[in-house]
Image (cartoon, rainbow over the protein chains, first blue to last red):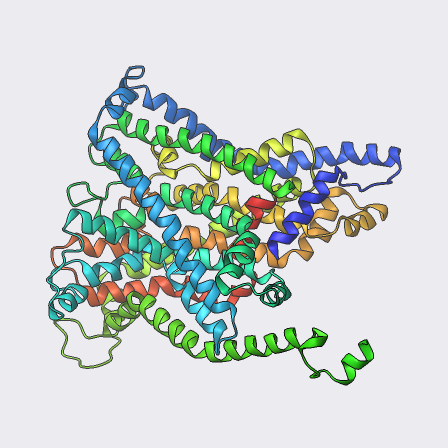
Length: 319
Length: 297
């Protein structure tokens, strides 16, 4: 529903209809416009102040810090691109970048596939379907601090519930958080567990707006279920799929608690993402310049990516 | 011919109508048979998915290692409140979160109105700016803000925490409000303008009054974000009596031996508010709303 309302808003904007509406007498319109822009200014002011304070100023200041050798206490001297050179030539940065990329890809597509599967399952009439829908949202609603505690209890030590279960089944004792590649996998599975409800909700909303008669027509024409899925369902939810991928990419790249609370970035940095690396560089190694430089590099990448995506979304919604 | 069709709906495939009718019956039969495995599948998946949450709840009511109680017990809750600062943490979390919710909506609603009704270059530029800012990692702002706030005495301070939460929820909150305002017909406002109402007057008296679902869904979003935050809290909070719940829960892991039953009791306390808010107000909140507000505008 929210999608359609937003679209109406946009179609109004596209037609270029002013807030006053079409066919309004010109003199009244101009009087109203002067008053309107004054009101608009005051309505927008608190938001602008906050944006400058919480987003604008820190962004500029981060640029300054990234080019200085300061600490949390003193500003330090200007060192130009030295911090960036340090960061870009350190293997830890590239390792973290690589992990962030993998984490994001698995996080986005893993949660999308699970969310899609469940949304399709829940679309048909199932007894107590509504209850299942709410229950399945819980991983997304429950705070990460709580769920990471539970996951820790389940997998952290060799005597935790799930490793013992594996042992009793004769499958050995997997060290979910101590073995580097297994820890990376565990963190990604945890991320998918946290994120799939978001995808499920996005896809369910999109599926709800698909007219079911389309399927009847298709099955009349002899389309198989798979054909119906790939040629009707997927294209019809493409737009919201696209949006959900974009949002989830941003969520995954910026994620801190999911990783940090489960593994702290370890073992041997196997699960250190760029955000975790930036955090540790600043607050544990007290190297403010390089730490901010890492965050700044991420930020610049995301600015470019999100401006491109914003354009793409606007274009796709005009089509 | 059509009369014949109606008179003899089952008169055979030659008429070309029995085909779909038969197909539909087959479909619904398949759907009926399908329900069985679907229900089993969804039951199994839900059970597996909820294991971590069930574990949390069960452990919270299980007697601790030093306890003499057996079976179901409430003593973990008692001990977590008497032996730790849990009640302070809960209070800190409530104060910060509720202030964030109120101020976020108060800032986002007027700004969202301008985004929804304004059609100038400046307004669409601002809208792009909000989109870009919401996608940026908080870690970038955190260090400069830490230094700025340290000079103002806002580090290790709930007011400082709240300001950052309001700032970081505000971007998406504004988009959500704007998307909702888009659904309120302009004609309602025009009528009030003709009656001599100002733009501000029509915003508060006409638009806001009809926006309860939009306001609620924005409020839930701000609530979840502030209540669940860990990154800002870990950077800005230092002393245990200023901790919010996420920091409080984490403080259990600093000791050598984690007291699992107590930490789970606190975890249950921490997850209750979002679960209750979500269960009660679920119908107002659609993730599609967030996605849609980002996409449609």
